[in-house]
Image (tube, rainbow, N blue to C red; front, side):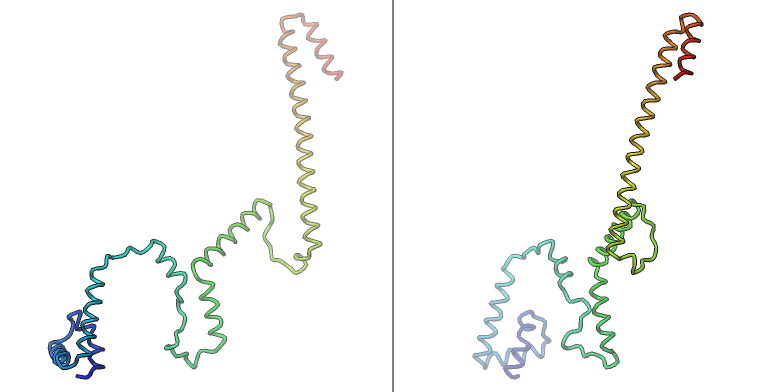
Length: 199
């Protein structure tokens, strides 16, 4: 057995996983070669040291970091690129692998959901966009028009609310006056009805 073969089989020898024939051949070589004997002693010392070291608990975020930074699906230098793959296929494949990662897909889904909720709350009807819809002047005019409409509606609601409150307070006054005058003469009731008619 040569020194190069001993170096290859030394790790298995220290672990005790060598076949009987290989182990006997390696031990015969170690008995006659001082350099390989020293190397074997160093490897055994390193293995004993590693066994004595306490096991380290990996941090909980390690798996997430490995998944996000590992090159998933990328070709290595050993993998030959097939001749049938065109450069367009490779470019599209890289793009889709990047875009279809879970964090990007989730981000896009949340963005679409957010925009659809905002459009629903703003009463925007979905339809196909045209190039003219993206004109900044038209966009600004649409926002200005919508804001003026919202302001006008709120002011009308406020004015109508004042009118409704005023009508309700007058009706309450009249009903209070009727209940207070219910014990009086019918002429008083008739005068109250005439007053209401005049108003």
